[in-house]
Image 1 (cartoon, rainbow, N blue to C red):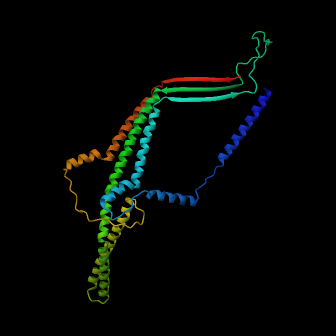
Image 2: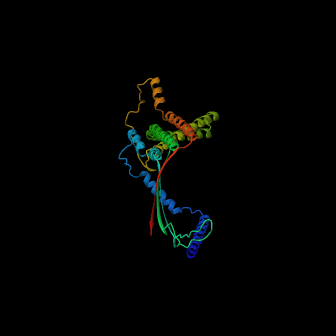
Image 3: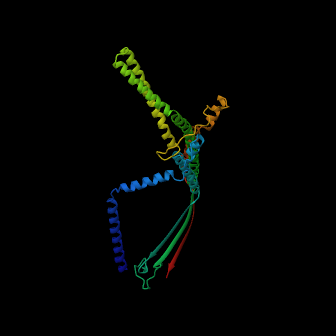
Length: 340
């Protein structure tokens, strides 16, 4: 037994030394930032992932194609789809919280010598002359398997699962809202870009004509061929017209880049728009009351608020359940194997 004690002390000192060194090493951790090359590699991989698997444009882009591409390749919509998928996955995991908890333990114990004992008389304090005895073997393997089920935890998990299911529906409504906003933005940006494509040359020609007229007005003023006040008024009008034309040209020019970003085309892509289709204002064969009813029924924001109210109600029920005492049902099995 003395030999076993010395060995145990050595093992304990070794464990304390290793734990101390691990603690000191944990306290000595310093930040290790990524290198610039690693950031560059990650950026290249992200950019490749953004545009891989997309169909290339084989001709002018129509409005229908732009809507199809924004619903298929837009990064915002893809992000909302991932959020919805994660929310639906959480609802699948919540089902396991309703099941009983199972715990399994296993262990091994060993001694260098048997745990021998010698009996002593309680009243006379006389030690027995019989040989020492022991009731536990030197080596033993134990295993436990337990099953517990708490009624209170089951009720809380039940309402939590309902809340996460509503959150999944909220993610779906947010995806619908993103799709609606993207479709609206694509229509608006497409016609702006189409106007820029059709009017760009005319706008530039008008700007050049206005600049030429401005130079003529300045020359007339310098030669005093007209009243100076009238000449200055003409120059002011021409400068204001040039400023407005340049602002229109800049706004129309940016529309093409915005459309490329919406349909997830690589930056700098050169494409043209197909404006041969009908450009009239579409008509809607619905009265105002019916449109209001459809808007209030299908609006994603209103639906999200309805689901949020249901989540709040379930949260109240969970708090009421937590005030109740818990009831546990448990079942366990213990096994011990010894070696003589």
